[in-house]
Image 1 (tube, rainbow, N blue to C red):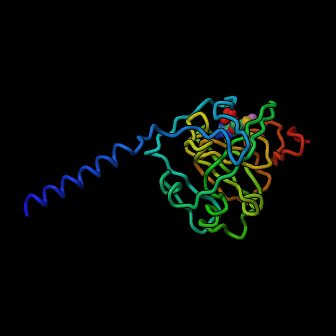
Image 2: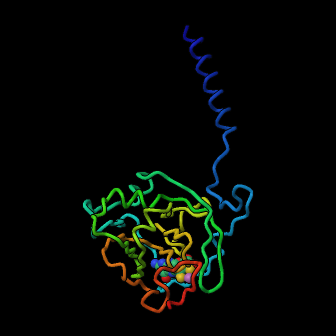
Image 3: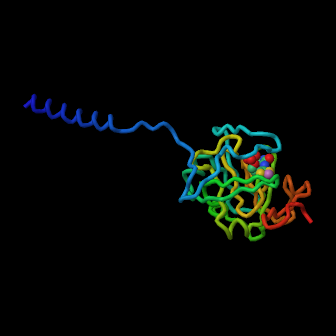
Length: 217
Ligand SMILES: Nc1nc2c(c(=O)[nH]1)N[C@H]1C(S)=C(S)[C@@H](COP(=O)(O)O)O[C@H]1N2
Ligand SMILES: [Mo]
């Protein structure tokens, strides 16, 4: 009886070991460069020209706040955002006013889901994004609630690098690159549609619409 158990045990061990040997060892994530038959840019194709250079956020002490004219102000950890909201992905092109562009597969959550969870008050009509480097930019609330706008934590299948805006960059579809705020720390609901962010204060169009000149009229 004992020996049958031993043989049986050895056989199971053998099968398990064989199975392990065949299991490939993951060598870590690789950047996706082609999606649904179309070529993508690389995460290295961006020009880095942020106002204060790349920011290095300590994720252990990081919180994303949803503040201002909301019924339920929120403060989230990185994991609460990444694991707590339904993920979406889409290829969207970022166009910088300097003349370069990148076509990237972005993955993240929908800003409208995040804002809805905080319950904007009836007076709110504007959303001001704040970043770790002091950069700000704003949007009409209707732009964010009426479109599928991503707040991305992955580019081409990889988590955002520090210079690319880790932990989060806004994918401000149909807007110039300067509206694609990186290193987001706070999303503030406001009733001031005339709020001007960093480049808005410096003569750039506040709407930042791609189909309009970026120099404010
Ligand atoms: N926080 C922050 N976000 C920012 C910027 C910045 O200086 N600070 N620069 C903007 C500009 S001008 C562009 S074109 C895009 C992409 O810039 P990158 O290539 O430096 O990542 O990020 C935008 N987001
Ligand atoms: Mo830019």
